[in-house]
Image 1 (cartoon, rainbow, N blue to C red):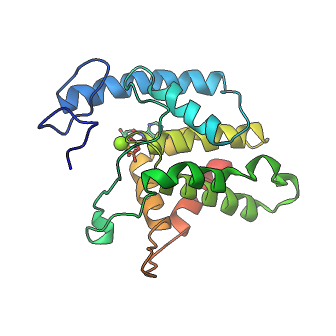
Image 2: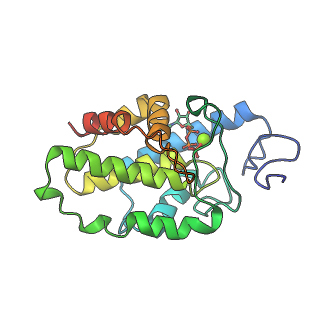
Length: 205
Ligand SMILES: Nc1ncnc2c1ncn2[C@@H]1O[C@H](COP(=O)(O)OP(=O)(O)OP(=O)(O)O)[C@@H](O)[C@H]1O
Ligand SMILES: [Mg+2]
């Protein structure tokens, strides 16, 4: 099936600048996204950490680039992972995305962080980051949106989280998210939680 998000016969996402060269688009994307992420760090986006808030955050970060910013994808996502011998994480199907977001986020505003141990806080935050990421609600920009949303949440609930650590170790974070979510509907489970927990724990120090 042809991917409706791409310019014909290319791997380049249709964008507001009509850029059809992948490396130019990457440069433009990096510039605009960094600008929007800085704005968000200075002025957190108000909301109640529900799925609407999550979608709005993606819309804000990617508003300069894609018409569909803030909208859930209409196509399945399959990404071959070297660390999984070429298999893909089982991301949510398009029709499951809204329900899966509700399931992950339903109790997040009510968690009693004040009475949890450091390990429990680290593990619960890691679980939420990983579960949101496994949904992959958007055609592009899932990692940046997930990390930004969870960092803002952690800040608002009284933790001082080091966002730069995630930014500076983006490749590690992505591999850690793949490792965390390496379980499959056929029962195979290669999941390893320690890598994500390590960086989330460090970011919370
Ligand atoms: N937390 C972050 N803050 C700033 N930049 C990030 C962050 N995480 C990743 N990046 C950068 O964003 C670019 C795209 O990364 P990547 O494609 O892995 O994530 P994504 O586009 O947000 O999510 P996905 O492709 O999984 O939908 C990379 O250049 C990466 O270095
Ligand atoms: Mg990407």
